[in-house]
Amino acid sequence: MLIQALSEYYDILSQEGKVVADEYSEVNINYIVCLTEDGKIDNLIECEKNRTEIMPKKSEKTSICSNIIEYRALYLFGLNFDKGVFTTSDRTNKAKKSHDDFVKTSLEFLKDLDSPVVNAYRNFIENWNPECETENIYLLSLGKKYLNSNFAFCLRGEIDKLLHKDDVVLRKWLNYYEKSSKENKNGVISQCAITGEKETISRVHDKIKGVPGGLATGAVLIGFNNDSENSYGNEQSFNSNISEKIMRKYTKALNYLLSSKKNKDLFDDVTVIHWAMSNRQVDDDIMSMLMFNDFDDMDARKTDDMLSKMMLDAKEGKVTSQRVSAITGIDENVYFYMAGLKPNSSRLSLKFIYKKKAADILSNIAQHQLDLQISENMKPIPFWVIKRELISPKSSNGKVNPELMTKIFEAAIYGTNYPQALLFETIRCVKTDKIAFNSNRAGIIKACINRKSRIFDKKEEIKMSLDKENKNPAYLCGRLFAVLEKLQQDASGNNLNTTIKDSYFAAAASRPSIVFPKILKLAQNHLKKSNSAAYYNILIEEIIGNLENEFPDMLLLTDQGRFMIGYYQQYQSFFTKKTENNTEEE
Image (cartoon, rainbow, N blue to C red; front, side, top):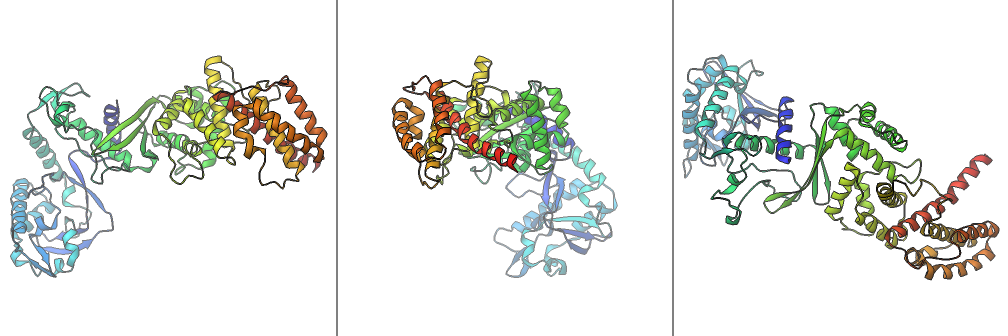
């Protein structure tokens, strides 16, 4: 699916001019050589930095082989630069051989072509003698820059009409490329696995660059190096039955995505690429913003507004693809793709790939964010924050299992149940990071419990704020623990460095029947010192009454999550009420 999707995306990119067609190559040009009509150098103009020109495809041979439209100094001028002087001599005669090949190849290609710039270029080739140009003032002005410079040509006074863009050159080049492609077939013709047509099969696939952790020279997505991988005598990528045409398409599209900040995100050692199969930039931008918090082109306020509207629809149970399209402006029929890549030796391994209509994904993302909300004014939680919350803040090199992040992606995109490992890891972090039980972690626990309950029981269990009607024993135990901790803090005048949470929270979340008798006994001393003893007594008696004076012996994982949500919501309610009371007094 990935190869076919990338091939289709290449066609979109090609129409938009965002990738270079197979017949051409991108070349960094450093200088433009202005020629007189008789082929002499009239001027040498330095280009601005990083000027890229689309030129006829460059040769991929490592031996001496001139490009049809050459740009390399050694081929064009046939001169070496050594110790401050130009010379034609060297041990291997590489400069002479390169220039001779350039002359032969270029004159053969330019034969029968007629235009002012072509004629000037032909005259340059025929009249340039490297041995007589070692003192050329234009080349001497370059000095050491000559060695690594690339050149383009034009007629003097017409710098905007470069040789490689001339109409007669381009027409001849396209015919030449098509003819040479047919002549250079490797002889292996078979049915392409993507198009279904009989085409020339690619023996070696182009390398993919831009995946962190991979080789600097790039890695292949499809490759066969071992005899054990060969099938029916087919060697290398003849096993894959991917045509040359499709290979060029998918590798160029993949390299484009990996070079784009908007289309690439990194989660530990997994690189996630994502794209909307659309020629509308807005579809890609909106998906990047709402999925990965990319605010390059649209501000965060607008993004929050769109997501808030979708979340409100999800809360009221009326979120649809049409509504999502109306809110975001995205085409509801456009498909969105996400793929995870990880380097593996000289290859890339595909960890996951997802495909779904963009509007459906966004409606599921809205529900995903709604599930994560633990308060009305809570901000959306991006995936990277979820990953961060699964790592201890004390850890300097903590990592999250990529497979877990993959399953979280999948649950958010498809609206399925969250992996049990997400709940386990979050609860573990809350227990071990005693001071780091924040709204994000509480929201993750709530989302895991509510989504599982909704999927299996069709009923959401935990509300967004304190629920005094919730009679679940684990939830009530969490509430009681929060009350006892707040009582302890008030009794000490909020001067404690450690509370019962530091000593008993993890144990109370697992074995309430063992821990609560101890901390209730401690609470009697705290009640004697508190100015609000009556208030706390009422709360304690109310919660214990709902527990029917019996604490659970053991809480399993989901109940431990309920305990923590009960604790979090009860504890937050103390500050919410205080804020509301202060507002009323004012």
